[in-house]
Structures are given as C-alpha cells and as structure tokens.
Amino acid sequence: MGSGAAVSAVLVEADRASGVAVVTLNRPERLNAIDLAMADELVSTWQELRFDDGVRAIVLTGAGERAFCTGIDRDAVVPQPGSPYAQDDPLLGVGPKANDLWKPVVAAVRGMACGGAFYLLGEAEFVVADTTAAFFDPHTTYGMVSAYESVLMAQRAPYGEIARMALMGTAERISARRAYEVGLVSELVPEGGALEAATACAAVVAGHPARAVEGTVRALWAASEAGRAQGVAQAPHLIALGNATAEEQARLFAARRREYRPR
Image 1 (cartoon, one colour):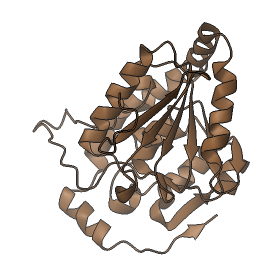
Image 2 (cartoon, rainbow, N blue to C red):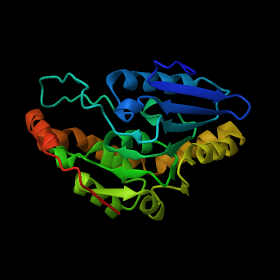
Image 3 (cartoon, rainbow, N blue to C red):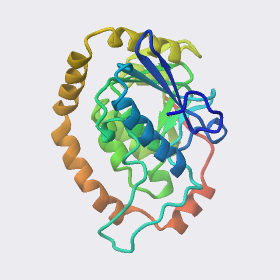
C-alpha cells in the first residue's frame, strides 16, 4: 500500500491520529480512468486496509480537478473467454465491499463521475461533492448495456433518476445540485472543498467504536442486498444479449456528440 509514490495509480495516505485513510485514484492525465493495473492496485489497497486496525474510516477521491473517475480506460485490453456463458469484468472487484472491507468509505467527488466510476460510488457509504461534480452513464450511447452500474446506483437514488441517467447516456449530465436534491450526494460544498468536507465526516465516524461502526455498515448493506444480488445475477446475460459488437461500439464512440444538457 503506497503512501505517495508518484508512479502508483492508487495513493494511500493514512492519518494515524484521526484513523482516516485517504485513497486517491491517481491517473489525472486519463481522467482517473481505471486500467487493469489500477484495478489490481485497488484490490490490493482494500485488502491491506482490511488488516490495518489503525484505519477506521476511509475517504475515496480522484486526483486532479477534472474527474473523480471516468470508468474503465478505453485502451484497456480485457481478454474474454470464448464461451457466451462466461464474461470477465475487471471492475467487478475494484470496490471495497467486493473485497470484504466493511470500514466506512466516504466518496469525495470533484468533476466528472461516470460509467465504471459507479462500481466505486455504489460501494461507498455516502458521497460528498463540490459544485463542479457531474454524473452520467455513457453506456447506452455507445451500444452497451448499463447493468452492474445501474444495479448499484439504483440503491443510491430514486429509480427514475437512475433510469433517466442510464437511458439518456451522454446527452445529459446530472449536476452536483441535482444530485444533492435527489439524495445521490449527501453534502454539497463549494468548488475544491469535497475532500476536506469528506475527511471531516470520516474523522467523526472514525472516532466512534470501530466494531459498532462496521456492524452498522454491514447492516446497511444487507438492507438492499437481496435486490442487488438479483440484479447482479442477471447482468452477465443482459450484457451478452444487449451489447453491440466491439467494432460497433468503437464506431459509436468515434461518432459521439460532444454537446450535453446539464440538469
């Protein structure tokens, strides 16, 4: 678990006095898109934090000013088995809950959060965002089924809001203000203030007895586990049936319109 190596795609800085660790997605030149190396680093990070009793709460954020995370890096090559009944998704294991980490995670969002970023936001306890934050799901625009992302995010905001985001694709972005109004974001702060505000929240939580906190996180997750498990079970089949070919996806991406409507 690195504490500041510039070459690392995931940085971890732990404050032993407060018990808070800040995990930073560190590929700002790629809008913090997740490549296979970063995916592996995230798994290692969550696994190490599970065993670090000095860390009692975590803040997850992205480096730079433009994006929290923009999902999987489009240049990432993901080998797939030949069988239509098997599909490998490198983002399925990048979240804290996927790695059996029940310490609370607060997400601090600045700039864009889209697509595969929802694997991470969907496994955070709550989201703090600044006024530059914007949320959208580009899958349908590029001929892909928004399956895992929609299943996770449907637990975080009203169905209609998540359905609209998933179906409108790149044509719309949910503004930070709208995200706060519908409950996707729990606190809205001025530009540049998300990390500080999220860290302050995490410090309060870290000051409570750890076992009670982790038990509460597990109970909250269990409250929506049945519906989420059913959705996740359906996801591979829906993706196999609904996704366009890689060639068609590339064509749609190249032909994409840059304009979008903020709301």
